Length: 256
Image 1 (cartoon, rainbow, N blue to C red):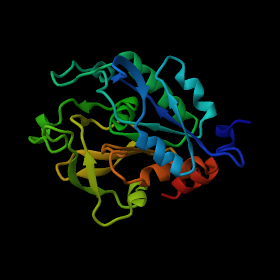
Image 2: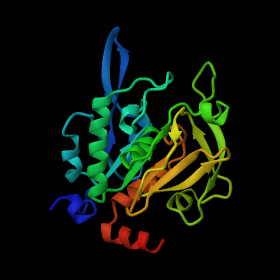
Image 3: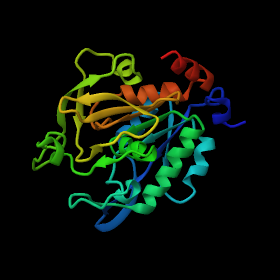
Image 4: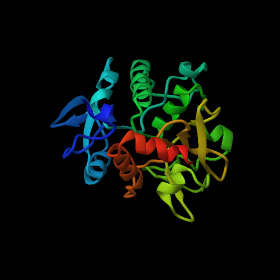
C-alpha cells in the first residue's frame, strides 16, 4: 500500500514531498542552458523538517506521481495564462507557458483529490485560486495604486506589509504571532476568490495574502515569498501534515 493510501509515510521512512519544478535559462561553464530547478531553500527547509524533497518537472502525466507522494509544494514562478480564467493578457503579463500551466493544474487537482497536504506559494496560490474557478488581478499596482507588493528597485527587493489573519485559521495557527508580516514580490493577486476557498490573510490594502481549501485537511496558499527568507514555519507545517495520518488531519479540520 502506498504512502497516500496509508495517509502518512511508511514506517521509518521520511515523507516524500514533491516540489513543482520551474525552468530557467542559465549560463554554466560558458554555455547557455535551460534547466529545471527549485529554490535550494525549499529543498533545505523540507529536508531539515525531516522530509525527502523530490523535484517534479512539469511534463504531461506528472499527476501520476501523486500516489508516491506524501505532500506537494507549489512554488512561485511565471504568470499564469489569463485564458485559464477567461481574460486577455494584460501588457504586464509575461512568461506565460500554457502547457506547463495545464500540467501543474492537473497535478495540484490530483493531489487535492487524494487528500495530499499542499503548500502553494505566490504563483502557487494564484494557481490554486484559478483551479477553483477564481480570477486574478493581472497587474496589482493598477488596483492598489502602489508598487509595494513588488518594489521597483535596481535589485530584487521584498515588499514588507503587516498581515491581518483570520482568527482560528490554519495560517494563523502556523504563524502564531501578534504582528505577522509579509515578505512579498508579486505583481498579480487574487481578484474573485475561487469556490471552496476561504481567504484567511490580507494586506492592509485589501490584497488577499492567504487562502485555504475549506474542505481539505491541509491545503494552504500564501502570496508572500516563503523560501526567500529564513522563516521555515510553513515548510515545517507541510512536513508535519505529510507525516500524519489523513484521518487525524480530517478530524482536526472538522473541529475548526
